[in-house]
Length: 116
Length: 112
Image (cartoon, rainbow over all chains, first blue to last red; front, side, top):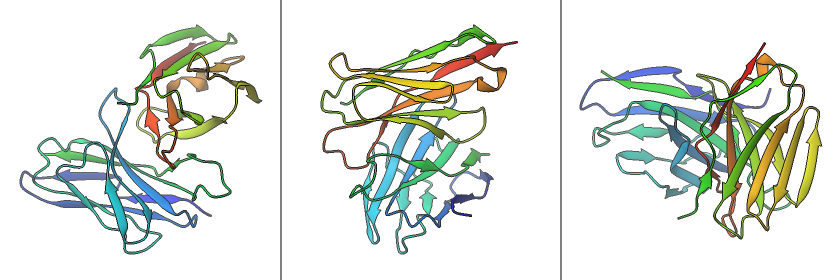
C-alpha cells in the first residue's frame, strides 16, 4: 500500500523542548511539504523540499527546522524558539511536475502537537 | 501576496439539496485549482482538480472554473450528511512549481 505516514499521531511538548515529527512516503514522490493548521484556519506552509538535500522556507519557518537526507523522509523539528507550537501539523507530497499534473498534493494523517 | 478567499460558513443545506461552495483567488496567472475535503480532526483529502475553464464532473461533485473572473466553485449534488466537512480551495500559481496557496475553508453542514 502506497501512502504517507506521520508519527506520532499525538505529541506533547514541555516548554523549552525540541521535538521531531516524522513524515515518510513510499509513493516515490519528489517534493514534500510541511504545513501547520490552527483551529478554524487554513493551511500555512512551513518548509518544503523539491529534491533530496535541498529545502526552502515557507511562510512561517521561524522556530522550525527540517532535513531531507532521503527521498522518502522529511522530518520536521519544532524548536524551543517556536513560541506558539500548539497546532495540527500536516505533511504532504507530490510528484515532480514534469509530465504529471502540477500541484496535486496528498496529505499524511497529521500530528497534533500540544505544549504543556 | 497571493490570496485565496472562501466564506468560512457554516453553509447549511438540507439532505438531498445542492451545496455550492465558492472560492476566489488573486493571482491571475494561476494554472491549477483543487478542492480538498477535511473532516473534523482529520487531514485534507483531494476530491477534485481542475485545470481549464468550464465544468468538470466526478460523481456527485462538479468543479467550475472561470479564470476571467478568478473564480472556482464546487457543487455537491444530492448532498448527504456524510458530506458535512470543511472544504478547502487550493490554487497553484503561475511559475509556482508545485506550490499551493490554500483558502481558509468553508464548513458545510448537511442536515438530515
